[in-house]
Image 1 (cartoon, rainbow, N blue to C red):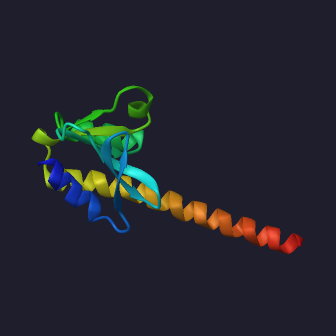
Image 2: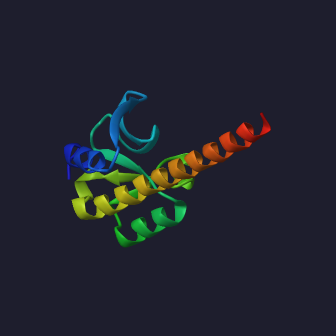
Length: 122
């Protein structure tokens, strides 16, 4: 797969927008990054859970590897485009996007609850 294929998959996620972070493209939902493309266009990153990362690396050797340092330990997972398939990356990308969407929904619910509490005290 290519960086353009990765970009197309990322932008197919509902509400996804392309932005830029540290001089390379990133893909966001509700303002939060769920995927990036490295400046060299040879790799991308999907933000998985550590458990999802382990599964993708085990089931697809050579296609995925942890990002460096604490980011990798937290689930940030590099996608090696030369070894990647659109089907598998699409699954990983969907999981990364869903995680962000769930968090945004949870944050929104918490903001509404807080607003209700503030409204009652006035």
